[in-house]
Length: 233
Image (cartoon, rainbow, N blue to C red):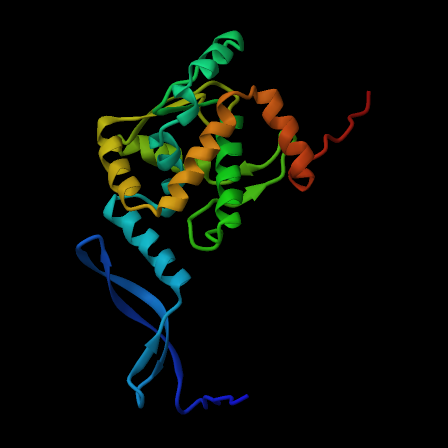
């Protein structure tokens, strides 16, 4: 077996800009880690670093902050299960008011963002697709920055929302026409595998009550369940 040793004089790690293509459009991805050998005229970049930089570029193109990308994607994506007659019967029986283009209940929204993050990790996108930081709470994982991101999205007229007293996130959020236009840019440039995981997340949550969702997360992710501290009488 022949091994080629690369000395520090031959190869150099640095960060630089890389020209890439988004469809037919040439773009510049900034701050990409590069392993280069000037003597050989070779530069190497990681595919994951390219994907991550593309997501940041897409967010900037759509005038979105990175953490807003999964929120907007979940709002924009269709719900395949809703197009089944059998499922519509189940929805009516369960008295679930499910509509495409909107998300409801703060606890549900937090869990959807967490679920999408978990799904992205399963397909190797966990470290390249933007996701929030989650903390443990009584009802399961909570996205720490959701409230701030939603307020910013509404301030810029990208979503409309209904807030209820005592909630850390709105009970209903919808994309505005302006938000839909930006979401279209985001969605059209999203990797197909991520689009499918966004749809899978929405499908998973469509037919489940909030109690069923909380029970599911308590069982599967006990580390994200904050136990109640008993109070003295």
